[in-house]
Image (tube, rainbow, N blue to C red; front, side):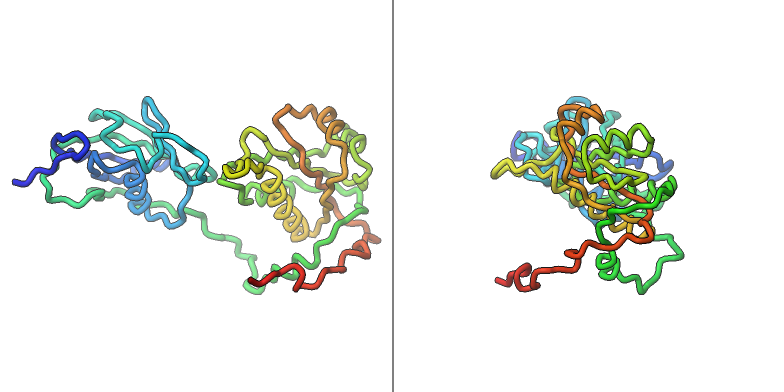
Length: 321
């Protein structure tokens, strides 16, 4: 019999069999066998395929002693990178548990139990799915909105949106506020760090605080103050560029388009005193304000600024190479 050996240790290669169970989904698990000399990255892709996933996201394994994290963002320099860390190096024992978190946004949590460790007989191809129980849930929820129209014109929505500077006094309902926050939560962020922190200001006292920080409040009935945590934002390793402001801008753009879709109006306000705003809202030192978004129903005589339709030629914006 041809018994394979681990090239690093010279000892007999071992096959580790794990049970990977979806947390909060009773009875859904996959049993996966993998060689000790293979990496946690190999293990990740075996799990990825076993649960019928299709969209790659960040992930990490957590053992009783270590976190083993993928280097998706290129900003982590660690021997415990998933592509470098081999299964046998963790010195796992049968019956031991670890966790696997896939997609830091949607938070797919898994409990992993080591079922067995046996010598490799050289006949198998690993990693291998050896047992499957229960149907995998869809990676993303399907759009169940029956009112969605196939002829929905996104370009038209972007053209109709304009900066509203005159609002009615009518309050914005909770359902609409939640819908606006939902699209902000869905917005992409650099390396999926999600550093945005959005303060929802709707009380009279809160609105007075906003008015003391900027003249561009337009007496709106609702304000979103979009900030980011500078300790959590991604920084490009080449030059240290902080992408927190970009993340906030992406969230605000999606919020403004959702506001337009709801028949409301908004205005991206960057003209505010950041020192006053920090003081009025009692923002921690690590929270950086980027923009204020007044939101409400446009007044009957609200019209776009005369510069709204003035656009540079497309040839100046789009540069072919």
